[in-house]
Image (cartoon, rainbow, N blue to C red):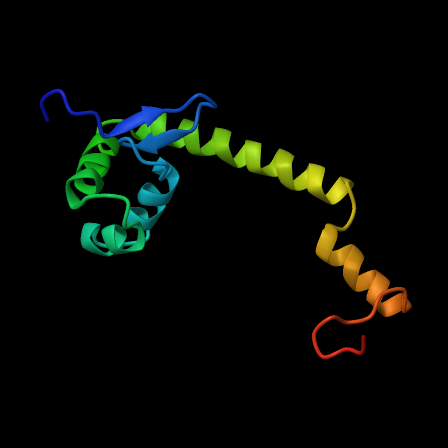
Length: 112
């Protein structure tokens, strides 16, 4: 593989593919689900086919590191999900509640 790095950690500790913002999780999960490198490449146009193959090749000898990273990412997403649920309904939910209560009119198809 030479000096080319197909996997890097960004400032927040997320593992990214090459110099793109595509997360390792995305490529690894798609590959684990049986998608071909060509199909993965078509899902993530920012990646070259070489980067997809390089990422898969990097994952093969690092299963423990990949599993540990994926567990850590799941924990991060769980914290964000719990925080969002604790904050109550988002903007869309609040607008729907206000619409049901009659405090705002529907903008699309509604009267002005």
